[in-house]
Image (tube, rainbow, N blue to C red):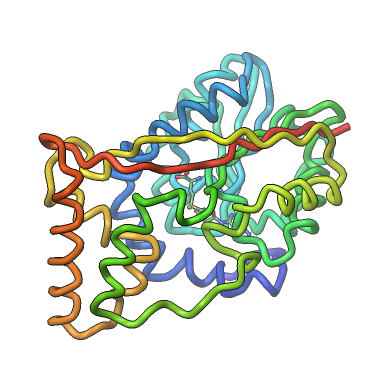
Length: 286
Ligand SMILES: C[S@@+](CC[C@H](N)C(=O)[O-])C[C@H]1O[C@@H](n2cnc3c(N)ncnc32)[C@H](O)[C@@H]1O
């Protein structure tokens, strides 16, 4: 299915989130929501959505933060989740209780025709790092905000500050070829890791009062369910799953065994807590 308006340079990301990777993400929806609950908690706190407000949730995925926001802005307010992935949005529509003031639209945030001046808050949990031309994307999203509106989003800091992702990947690399190098600014999970770049993008898109708050997290990749669950998280989605994809079965097995042994060193009862690091980025639309 084609999107009405997109930035052609986002084509690879749009294909990625609508293909097998998108399917893998949707299969892990419940686990991801538990894993990333600490991010939702701190981001929702900083976003401080109030009753009656109108909110855009960008790259909303299956909509768990859109639903949380809708509970905060009801009654009188409304949340619109925008995402390029039909797979993610199908799950979002299934999960949304009919009484909540939330809707979902399929669109590329870079080119989507936001209703001008509609929103009081632009929000995203890990949904804004995948744009080929982020200045253009944020300039377009700003069109959907009223004057004085707030921005609050979460993005990952650099890989070495995120052992919950890096440790399994390094173990996988003992057995399978490394993923192609990506430049720090290429669209992807870590493209907003550099504070100066984020400030530059938001400033050039016309936002003011840009602040980046470093937040350290402890993410239990076992979700309280033991070592097998931790391994499933590690290989389920993200860079480690991409590194293992299409590799011969014996290499996948050897990599999974190494990952399991490395994670066992961090096991505490049924938990495997590992460090994660994000920025909470806030700004205003002048
Ligand atoms: C890492 S997921 C985060 C999903 C969700 N916000 C969450 O926290 O569970 C990134 C999301 O961004 C979406 N996305 C990627 N590029 C996009 C674009 N150009 N416009 C809108 N959404 C996009 C993907 O489809 C995906 O659902």
